[in-house]
Length: 271
Image 1 (tube, one colour):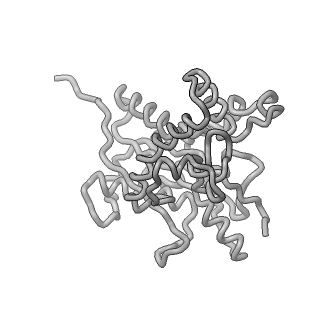
Image 2 (image 1 turned 60 degrees about the vertical axis):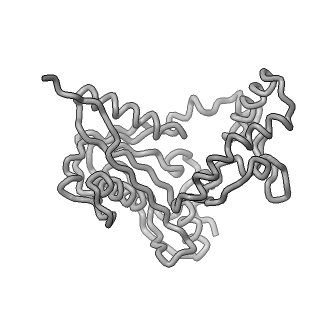
């Protein structure tokens, strides 16, 4: 009988370290990623206490991590330092010694592309169990800077890692910079308007479509305790320009743009 290498997802985990709660711990992005991974391992073995299972964790042969904002844009960073080897910093906290450690490139699609890659490698028999994690601690970094507090998030791990670098060449070039096509909303907004023209829709009609598309997502977010903005919005509330819902880049109003601070830089030494 042939071995079935069909990959499946066996556990997931989330965490939000909220500034305005008694449970706030001021975790670094490595610590947040490790806690999310710990919860995913706990979910995989059916534990409800979120502590995971160290004996189970030792079966993880591969780990992949997203690239944090700080490691994505060279001119931005916190004054608190960072890990030189994000995947293995997370693995160390979980008691994992991976034979494969991947530090993904810059890109909002990397969670999906990394999952697809690991699934392919598992199907080919390269490894049997993998963990994919990512985290940002920008809100905490901004909070600590504002409070004039100092922490040390620097870490050096000597372990093998497939560091794929930033690879920003395909994201920005002289032409896009000359036309101020730099941020995501600007770039995607151009594509949206090209689609709108192809569909022969007015701005008002297309805005209604955008609201109808994203309203169900807000309904899901409203029920998720880890959501950044747990608010249910109607299609009209999402697409109508108001004082609190300004136009960011046509057709995106503020409520139609990701705003969980993963793209809000903290400049080193900022007061």
